[in-house]
Length: 454
Image (cartoon, rainbow, N blue to C red; front, side, top):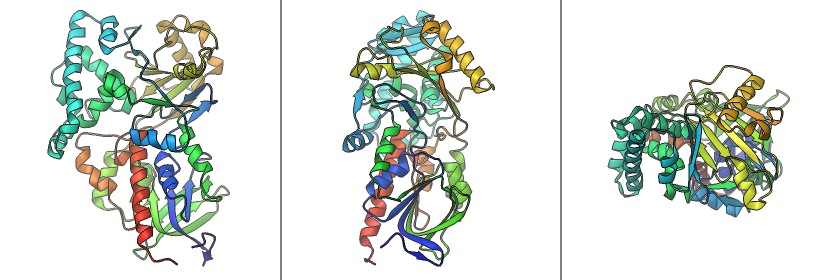
């Protein structure tokens, strides 16, 4: 079918994809040989991936890491270079002290907490790691039982310091706390990403930044298939089959597309706003995923040819700081390509209640002061005038609360010829976005193959 055909003022397509984040662009990549259009409200692709710098030294102000084999396979298919972080040291900042170690055990030995607190944290970590590794052998019923309780309940009684450290890990990775997050997902986000050697073997950085994935897919789409600055205002199915999408273009004019299929890769709150006729069960599940978490991310340029206190560490949670709870050293990745490069230090505050309500300049100044207290050398290494800040107010990550599995079916369910994808249907961040976009694209390919040619 010719996508340029207009009938009664309506453009007609086989597929319309709403949203050019990783979920929408993954689906678009699978459907790139079909008659499709992708609508994106922002002037860029990538959604919550946002990268800067260049291909030799870069930073991410949104999603940080590739942590699933499917996402890694997509990057390889696209010709995007991945850099393993498996050789980096483990790190943790707490009590104004930065500890590091080649193993979690060595890291714990060097952390500035008491011997009793170290023992409690170690025993809790071992217990949770065993549960994490046992998940693959569990039945669906056993997984649902773990999902039906919070991570805090799954941990049992632990010392306040252990809870604080694990809360820092969980919150810096997912935006949620152990007191509300599903125990099933909390195992991976509260422990696996930072303190599990097995998990670290599957973590990669993307050369040039994670936004390169969406940028590369966009470059491979048919001419005219991607429309930036297109804000979706309504999605409806008046006849029960064809999907009618109305959107505003850059000039503010309202336009309409009719399509056989619609892949809705919008965040949960946008689905609630624009998709008409959503079932009560889906609406309740969407509301449970909102509001999304809040994140503030700052990238600090590091001079070339200097040594830093964070050399050799890639990622480290940080407890008891007012303007950040996660440190990501993109200099580690840059130095795998050229040991002389300083790269960037990325410092993230994920949904911390202590976030100061100040403007960007003041926030950067406060964070710089905290970094200097943690790393005195930062006074000479990090220049606030060169810092790049990005705020994600209630739009960073969906809430994966206890009982998520019982709601997942409703989140994923089609509404007529509208199918849904996004990390809120699977798991927070890039793995969930990529997996759900892949499945949505595959489903529509099968549906189109079953339709008679026009």
